[in-house]
Image 1: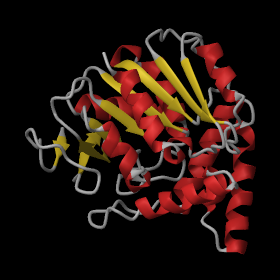
Image 2 (image 1 turned 30 degrees about the horizontal axis):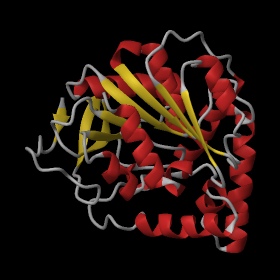
Image 3 (image 1 turned 90 degrees about the vertical axis):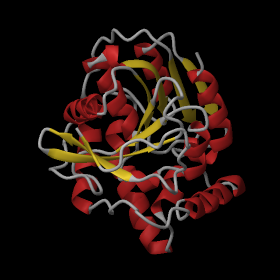
Length: 288
């Protein structure tokens, strides 16, 4: 069951106005937001990145995706305003996402998994492939993907450098250091401030550490044989420091029918740095 206001009629809701609601999942309350039209075909469920809450999505990207469909931004147990203990395995996080999706009365969805959210999305495909019609995997890698076990070191070094240089660590981790990359980081952080009320709670250091351990565990695992043969779109930046670009080949080994788009001069924040192109590509991919 869900709590809070239900439905918005035919009025499309924008990112800055979307109310935060709660889905009950095995004794915990997982927060989510709904945007777009309630009559826009198959809903798109979006799973966010490492260390993120619901406010970490780029408002302009999400609003563009929600122009023609219902978009559901789904959080994780113990993250932000969601209650319960944070999950330490993506197998459990995926089970929560499946339960939350079905609690919303949905039996078929599209998925957008960003970074860590892409890892959770892959596990959803493994656990409940009939739930998903189409999936976008952005800036992510499969189990055992190249360089994933090094993400903790890359992240910690960027945080320390950010502290030393008074720089937001996501500027260092998500964007290239070219002029275009620095400008993209600046405008991205400005857009994150557009939502002024009803903001999600901050992600705690304990949650961040648990998520890093889950990524490390994922990087040491052997990927299962997948039975998912429906459409897959892989998006990646050519200068991704957190999830090396070689993970696109590793994903293709799992999903050989997938479409791949690699963006030049783009880092881990490929979906935010190229929000207009990504919105156009994803919208086209999701059209029936």
